[in-house]
Image 1 (cartoon, rainbow, N blue to C red):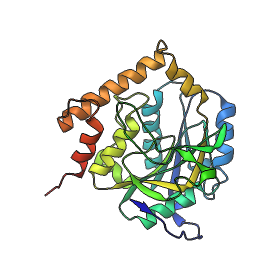
Image 2: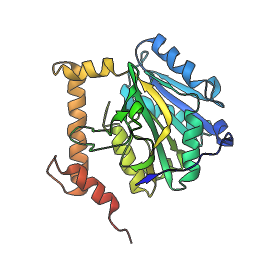
Image 3: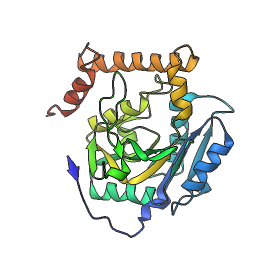
Amino acid sequence: MEVTLKYPKSLHPETKNTFVVIPHYGSDDMLDQCLKGLYQNPGIGEENTVIVNNNEQNRMFTRGVNVGIQKAIEKGAHYIWILNNDTVPDADYLESSLTRFHLSPDCGLVGGKNLRMDDPDQIFWGGSGRSFPSGRCKMGRVSKGDLVNATRENWGPFSSVIFDTRVVPLIGLLDEQFLMICSDSDYCFRIRMAGFSVWYEPKSVVLHHLGASNKTRVDSQTPMRKILQTDQKRFFVKWSSITGCKDPQELDRAINAYIARPRY
């Protein structure tokens, strides 16, 4: 379902209750670039940014995010913005995302338009396709006017998403059996099972550097590749058990059918 709406220009008061969680691993220069873009968003500064330094203790992505979420909630966060350290968000990313929450009262999570850092005309996430056995995204070109409408989606990649902390008492934190991947789609499915919706917001734009992660996934002999494969296997075991679907090619359909089933 596509929705085209007019956005108000006033700054949302909830910006002061939004905390950013950044799991950091790798180059500090990359993190500095991320923060430079992030702090252009009104209402966001060091006081409401939680950086989880995995260089000091490599918790992997999912556990690092959970550490940050817990700290943000302790500080009174209403919304939590999970942001990769290899991204640079636009200056109105937060404003546009909070507008989406106001326009869609059942919204639990908003993901923004992901553009390639090395080719900003290419949209590599503008909505979700199949989540398993490999994550597929709606892709397009800015220059062609692709993916310009806000849409309800099945899941969003946690390179840059904002979620309402009202979901946490209902579904908990990210599932730490997934070390690096699948915890994002899993969390989105659980948000939807709790009665909230997941949205793609095209006015929330973020640049994402893909080179290093893509290189890692190509080499099947790297330890990271084995971690990614294990995460996928665990995702299948978990959701095939929930849905009763034993066919990997049909699992995504089965998950969405399970979530959409009538509840009495």
